[in-house]
Length: 261
Image (cartoon, rainbow, N blue to C red; front, side, top):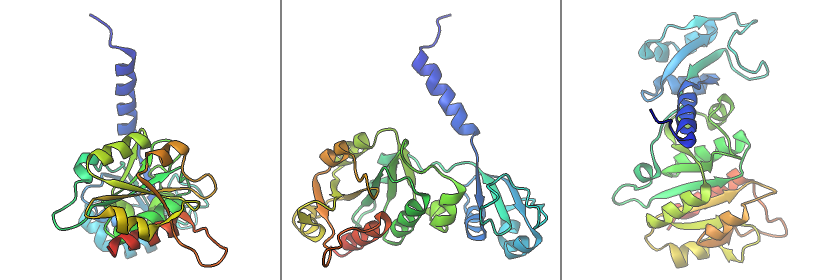
């Protein structure tokens, strides 16, 4: 019997490891939204009596049997510094599907996606997810490396958006960008040193095409390869000498700008 190639073995091992991984979500809002999500595989629920009372309807609807914990000795395996509010839920990661499945959009509505390059702060990513949900983005896309995995901290910051807003981590961000371009997307990279204002870029080049907004983290910003793959680099006009926004604020402003065209 011939042996499997090494790359096949490694791929199978990675698939098994991913299937075995679980995430502990914490906080009343994050746990409530996960309990209510029929697509979320739920494994173990630990709550205090007070949290159980607040989540009574969601727990009953989920069919889960909660473990009641002492509020003074909360037994869930999470960081003791986490603001858990007496509720923690062990789950499997969500599977949203492929770019082809998620980024086609619906008739009568312009498809919009957000791509994050080297944004590693869960608070920023959670805030971007909330804005993306509010403005109807089809997905938030980030590279597997140098990005935020699905964690309890991200879920709490996203305030429920993690259960509803597709968050896709891809092997290679530039490859994903090129794939979107083949699907008809025009990609605008937000860069504080760009010459073209965002509004001008949207007005001159967006037309009726699907739009991808590409953002990097404060400080390092987008990688050069990411910039080169964008169709246009644009900036958010600032008043006075202060010309930099937090990435989550920049995403919200850009998403609002797209919603107005």
